[in-house]
Image (cartoon, rainbow, N blue to C red; front, side, top):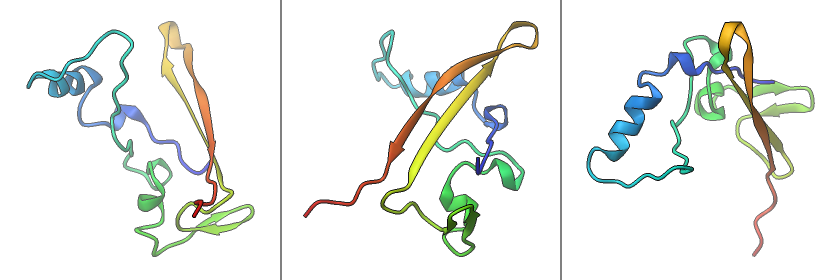
Length: 105
């Protein structure tokens, strides 16, 4: 784990993000997804992307297998999330994993 950004630190709530998306006529239907953009908190361990974590590539991030400033071929990234549930429980939102593969000519 390299970061734990809290969505609670976001400036806009999900309802406000939805309003901004649709106020000028963009259509949205049940089941559609919309993205919040990068989620970052105020602490260094809450920064939400490698660009922020490495200060634009100027400060490499130390990992168990070396250092990174940006993703490289072969890197695998897993994103997991949860939301607060009733009475202090957590609702798991699953995880997604992807691997960076070399570009093909």
